[in-house]
Image 1 (cartoon, helix red, strand yellow):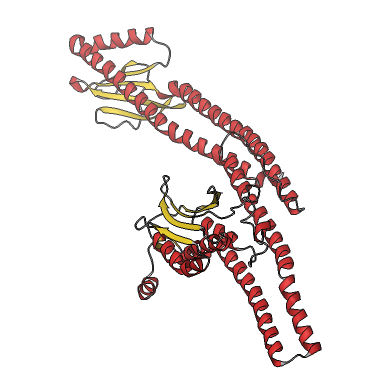
Image 2 (cartoon, one colour):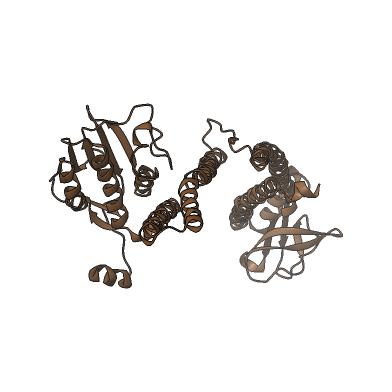
Amino acid sequence: MARVIRSSAATLAVSYVLLGVAALVLFAAPLIYAWQSTIDDFLVDILKDDSQRMTQVFQLRGPAGLKQFIDARLGLQIAGERILLLTDAQMRPLAGNLRAWPHGIPPKPGSYTLPVNLEGRVIPLTLVRTTLPGGYSLLVGRNVQRYQPLEHRFFLGLAAALAVISITGLIGGILVRRALLSRIQSIRQTVSAIMRGDLGHRLPTRASGDELDTLAQTINRMLEQIEQLVHGISDVSNSIAHDLRTPLAELRSRLEELSLTRPGPAETFAEIEAAVADVDSVIRIFNALLRLAEIDTGMRRAEFVETDVGDLAAKAVEFYLPAAELKELTLACRESGPVRVLGDRLLLAQAINNLVDNAVKYTAAGGRVSVEAVRRADGGVGIVVADNGPGIPDAEKPMVARRFYRGDASRATPGVGLGLSLVEAIARLHEGGLELSDNQPGLRAELRLGASLTAPARSPARAVAAALG
């Protein structure tokens, strides 16, 4: 029972019931006021009309005629319907259904509502006092209690409406609680399954599109990202264990051989240089992994500035031009004017350099490589690196961006299989992606960037540093 009381559905139901009661009270309060004001004004108007009519009778017939008129009226009306009293100048009753002038009535003519003792009972009356010529006084009144049954029925209807609101709210709270508990139970089952290691479990969604359905879809996207990250960490761990084993084993073998054979200085220094190269290879792997981890966490977004990727493409071509000439390759950058994008300048330069490096590395002598920054139809930006080399088979295209993945054609070339992984991570950081397609022949790699072209506001320290840099 305590759990039901503390549940959010019960709180919501009670809140709606209280809100409905408050709305009903606010709605009924002006009605009660209008009712009472209308009844009071209506009574006073009727009594004033009666008093005016009797005043006319007095003026036409005198006191005796008014006495006859009052007696006739009392004979026709229901007992207690009207209160009538005519007195002389000494306040002695001449006609009417009151034995004496009531106490507490002010001497000034007008309308009054006050309790009057009638035959031993105190009854609230609305009275109109009129002073007639010759010192005569006329009193016309009605019993206010005659309208109380209508008021009782009004309050009875108000109480019934409160009961309906309360019962409806409680039933609605129970139904809402059941619906919420069913959805919460599905969330609990999903979380329990994930805690047991079933990362593929997802929350059920409906086609209603309500708030809970939107929340379930958001949680499912989060679970997909978590599953991807967990599998990525597992793959990276396995890849590190596999790819670092070779250089470390070679390093240990060299050092062990030096320790056992103790060769001459020339051979010893040659082995030391080879050992240093193995260590550099391991350091490059770790640096690439650290850079990927930094990109995946989104920490580099703080470095976003407005950058001309066309200029970065031209500088990448200029940097790799000597290497291309050694292989007798044609390396060119197609000028298309400034192509600006909001992004991390260093990361974008590294991504473009990686694409150009791969193209130069895998394109045979006499081939050609072209680099171009383009504006896409969807408003984004693309950096296209195309070559006429061997290309990548369609079956391998979805896998080449995986970390440490190396296809059959690349196993004879130096590298650790993190270049395209880094390019794709940089593209994701800039709300884009990496698209690989056939260049017929060769490979066409497009680094797509979808970031806004408006640079964010920078702090004064960052602006000074950018100006000095």
